[in-house]
Amino acid sequence: MGIFGGEKRKSGGRYQFRVSDSLAVPLRGYLLRLKLVSGEPALGDIAPGRQITLRAPSGKERAVRIKDYSVTQGVASQMRLDRTHELDLVIDAADAVVDNETVEIGWTVSGP
Image: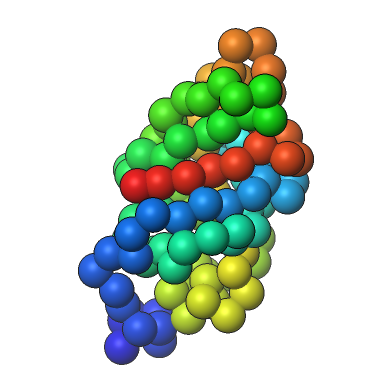
């Protein structure tokens, strides 16, 4: 059992999420609401400080660091991720822009 009551995995391998919502959060950055499309990510693979790849529908990509989890859905846990296949992350506002395109619905997030 993990700290928050979920099974803790060392690594879940490759994963891909679809951005289902994004919004600027004053003084924090950009919140990305993610829905799992493929893979079985371990929460540690998408933890604050880890790197993810943002990909626009146009194909442009950018590697960014996760700043924090959002607490809008409660405490992030492996159990919640496995059950809902959703996760909310916060990234720096400057990282939310790729070649003058701001991350929005339809973008994808992948890793590791």
